[in-house]
Amino acid sequence: MISFSSHISFPKVQWIVWSFVLLLLFGIYLQNDSFAEAATYAITTTLFYAIVIYGNAMWLIPRLYEKERRTAYIILIILFLIVVSICRLQLQNALYLQFFSKGKPMPDKNSSYFVMYYLSYFLSSILIFIFSIAFHLSIEYFRVREQQQLLQKRTAEAELKLLKSQVQPHFLFNTLNNIYFVAQRESPDTAVLLERLSNIMRYFVDEGTKDLIPLTTEINFIHDYIHLEKLRMRHPLQVQFDIHGEPDSLLIPPMLLIPLIENVFKHGIDKRYENNFLVATITIREESLDAVISNRIYRSELKSGSGIMNLTSRLQLLYGNRYIFETSEKDALFYAHLNIPL
Image (tube, rainbow, N blue to C red; front, side, top):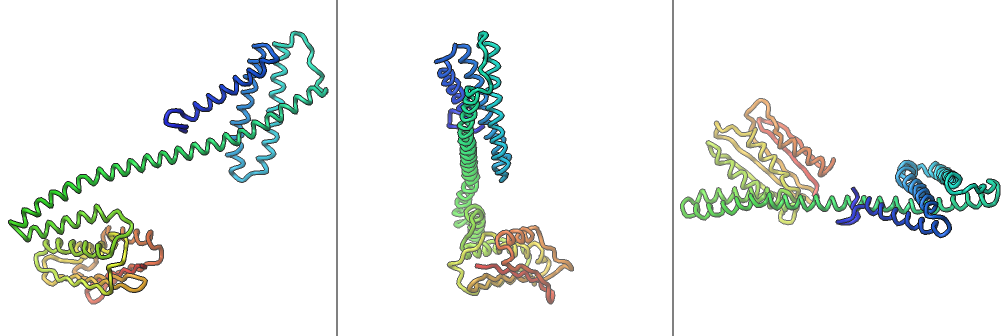
């Protein structure tokens, strides 16, 4: 239902307008006719006005005019107005003869009296046709406004849900901070781990929803992730992380590099062996960022997880064909190469 305001709906407005039109016509007819005759003519005239307005606004305009069938629309609207005018005149004449003529004969249909009546009915139909265009525009206006109000409502609801969803993570952050202060006194190593875990969680909540984040933020997140993953290793993991260029002023979409690192820990490391390693090289050029990740291959087939598939989909959406993402194997090593424009 299209809302006219917070209290009055658009259909109610139409009822009010039509009631006003009916009373106005009744008052005009009552000046020359009896009460019953004026009421009859007012009702039939209002009915035919409604046929013109709703027929044009709800059927002819949407089906013909708005579909670029302008010639057909013009022809049909002229025929429509002529037919409606004739039907209205014939109906009111029939009602007059049946109930109100009191035996008086009707004027000759070929007389100037009938010609003037036909013409006046047709002209009034044209006037109502103009109102029907305004009515159609008002329908579209209220429909658009209702959609905007609905969108604003949904946006407000989404913002409220987002705020609610952030309550629990921030409560958890505060709890982690409390544990961190205790661990600082009792176990400094545990305190460091809690700090890194807190950084990772804060990244997901505060940075993960943004369109762009500083490259340094992404790199710090990767360092925290690697540090926590190394705790699961039975033997020390050799990590080499090199950055060529100045990352401070660069922005990239969040979670763009971490899938490459995550894939190494999921599929490119065997905890039974001591010689696991991860080499990550990020090269910042004038118009692009180049990342190469390499690790040892322990399996005959190295499978890429859902993170890599999701990364490929994101790259396609973000950059179209302006990116490079490829994987290769050479000398028992697995390489992942990503190049994105800046």
